[in-house]
Figure 1 (cartoon, rainbow, N blue to C red):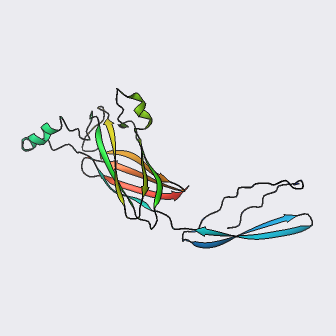
Figure 2 (cartoon, helix red, strand yellow; figure 1 turned 180 degrees about the horizontal axis):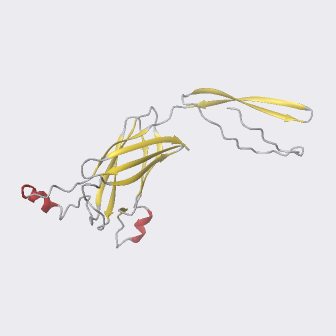
Figure 3 (cartoon, one colour; figure 1 turned 180 degrees about the vertical axis):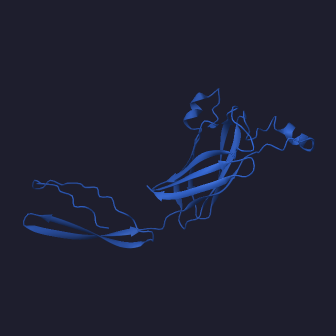
Length: 206
């Protein structure tokens, strides 16, 4: 990568100048050389620096699980009665658990992993009326470090708006998911449906 030249103007003797230059990192780990060229009136100087690009972690969503409403039939009467004490992902439900399983598929440990959900008008993070300050953390979960090959479950409690619809034409509701750790950000879109969840996840360096 060749960056655009940065014009500094005159620099007084003995005065250091700090610059920040963004660079694009290669996809493969290894040792890479970065050349820095300084041009000034009457001369030119160049120095080479070695960058050690290490392997990176790669996080992926394995599954998304949540209780789904049973079919409204007499044969499912027991399941229907169980929804009184165990909420399902249906209009008007409260404290519905959504469990997201995340795995580190990379060769190195992912440090300080934070999982955040972004909801819309239909689905909102559950906030206890006895602890309104929980709204500050209801949509976030800090899970710490993930070793290579390690899986972890993250559970969020959500409320479903009672004005929404479960009509056959409605496929479900979307929930945004962000899995962030140093220098990486994985952004996903989850389709929550009473049939089966679908996941869309992409990662990028930030």
